[in-house]
Structure formats: structure tokens, C-alpha cells
Length: 52
Image (tube, rainbow, N blue to C red; front, side, top):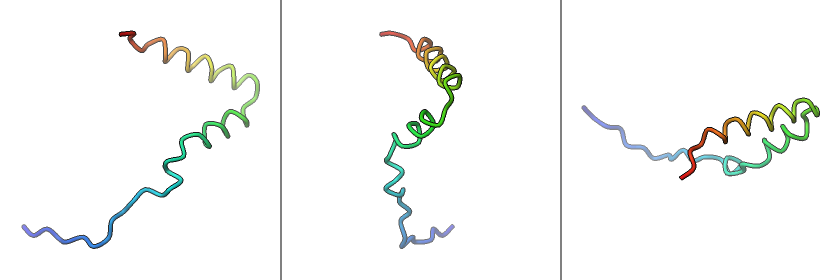
């Protein structure tokens, strides 16, 4: 079995390292009811994390 040689490397775009824009846009575009739901969902999920 032959393995082809790769001359091109696929890299993640620089915007991939931006972890804050999308959540911020989601938060800013949410209604007050939606924001309450997001907070409740995060609280629920974080309460499931074991404390060491």
C-alpha cells in the first residue's frame, strides 16, 4: 500500500481561535426569555460537574 505525499497542509483559519464572538452575538440577539433559558441551561449543566 502506497501513501501519497502531501505538499499542502490544511490549517484552521485564524477566526477559528475566536471563541467569544459567536456566543456574544447569540447573547445579544436573544430575548430576555431566551437569556433566562440560556442561564438556566448553563446552571443545570454546570451543576452536573463533579467538584473535586
